[in-house]
Image (cartoon, rainbow, N blue to C red):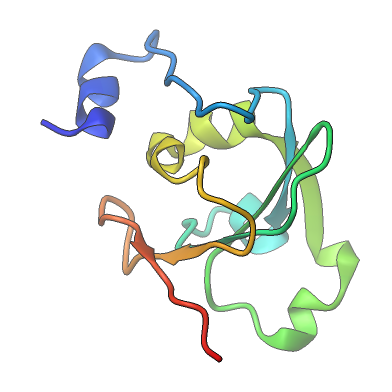
Length: 116
């Protein structure tokens, strides 16, 4: 059983252990498509700042033009995101410039290598 399975098996009262440097109240950006119910299938991390985790959560089908419009995103907290998808805890400690994707909910996160 991996860490996420243990969290899920423990029930709703289980609180995932956050990696060092990431706090429950830190913010992240969430695509409106995700806010409207699409699953989180692609994430990337910019350089974090105090109170900002640096993470952006996407469904993975957003075109570049969508990503360029700040009105298509809303700030939420890390805690909010983990309440909706506990698997995110497994990648939150990744360094800046990291990106991960998966094919569907319940699938493992795969780290993307930066192209030169």
